[in-house]
Amino acid sequence: MWLTNSSIGRKVIMSVTGIALILFLTFHACMNLVALFSADAYNAICGALGANWYAVAATVGLAALVVLHFVYAIILTLQNRKARGANRYAVTSKPEKVEWASQNMFVLGLIVVIGLLLHLYNFWYNMMFAEFANGGYAFVAGDYAAHDGAGLIAFTFQQPVYTVLYIIWFVAIWFHMTHGFWSAFQTLGLNNKVWFCRWKAIGTAYVTIVMLMFVAVALAFSFCGGACSAA
Image (cartoon, rainbow, N blue to C red; front, side, top):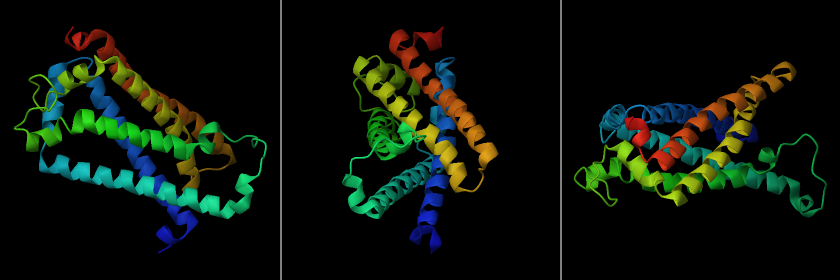
């Protein structure tokens, strides 16, 4: 099958899964933003997206997207290294008009995956998994219900080390997504000389807005401890 056996097909899979993940992050950012205005409203959303069959199915589907995206990133990276052969060891000057993110997409991807594992530990483990395995209560210290997302956000970002780690993660995602956004459209053939710069500008603006939503929530809960949302 050309989707899995050809370089172009693999890039198409990378592009489609990447766009799907960007859409998910957009939803997640908008959902998190609710916590800045109403802890009760945010917890109601968390309750609706808890250990329900549709939420579990969506989680499995999302995990499959992440795995596909990461696996094909490894395949394409190894394929590119093999194609360069011994030339990859040669000392060369930095190519002109090649973005830093483009040259470091795999490293950025690794940082994103490591950050994702931390995020799963802090939230998925204490929310959806806790509903199944801990009687509806989070595993962290304190009497947090598994659907008390606002409380868990406050608990997490009251610890400065987590705030710093998450900011680093958000920056890595920003670099990864700003390149991946226009690159995906280019791979899918929705790009040309006229739209190349447009997609780059649109992608940078779009991704910046999405990531600033995440940063705003992290900083607000870090400095206000959740009091901001209750005001």
